[in-house]
Length: 435
Image (cartoon, rainbow, N blue to C red; front, side, top):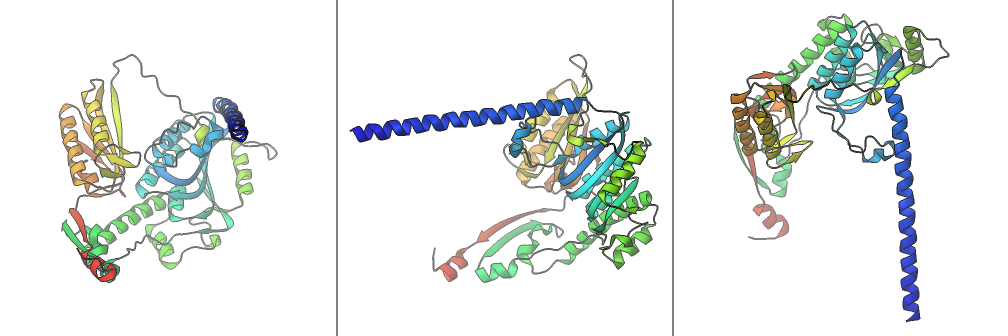
């Protein structure tokens, strides 16, 4: 009995001590986070004159900035979302910076950009508009991929590390085919599709690309590449023929080959910083007043009195499915509810639906399409397309009053498909299971 109580009270004391330690650790983290938050707020509200807006891009560019509940607490960054930088906030902040007397220019620190060319084009257009204010944009990278370079071509001056590299070779795509593997495993796929250009099922039916799929793939790749060349040629004062010649003859590894054409200066980052100091009129020994993009705040315009007219902007990003969906999935129930609320709100005078979707469930797409047709009857309904609005993504868009897209948006509805796998042969011949 004595041993039992000894073990019991020993365990109890251990639990109490562990709980107290955990409480102290949590208090320490929260205290540190709140302290850092106040420090960050001071930095945000104390924007100095003669500042440079620093935009570091390393990851995805999503349509919308997803609000992170832990964003205010610097010590809780491990809980931050991974949705990527929001295009809506990028464009909004760049536009605001063009008229902000405290901002003298933009420093693009480009590392690795993920995402489609339509979103990059929209961001690039915002940078070009910024240059019209007379302010500078300097871009620097150790290695420019094609996405990074396409964005950088909007800059006033492009710098690259002397030992870096620049990729400029055109666009391509390849597919992986599974038919032979499925045959070896004894798996038979029953495929239903309508439309010869509906190529999503081809990897399960064929062992190479069909002529129809090759035709459409070449068409949209050439279209996107042509749009990129037109934009680069205009900003870099080169002809499309010159750019094609560079792309056809080499993938530029040595930046010296690109100097004076695709880039302006070979320089290390400290030399770029020195150049910016001269541009902003500060001495070499002084530091540049950088303001990071995430700390650069744009004050929201006052909405005025209740009842003020407004425009509802609704985002539809990801695969389309029934149910609630999420930040990277379009749930028909959730999206229909948002459109319906905007339709029934008398203060909402127009609806803008931002679509970035490869499609998905035909049923869920039809449910959303129905709500779009109802909303269109009561107020103007506009669709803005991002990187992709294909299949179901186009179906939910087609009922709008007006549809706007970038030249390199991939869009269209080319059919439907379904897949039903049959494992009977595989079970019998490979596993010895009969049914």
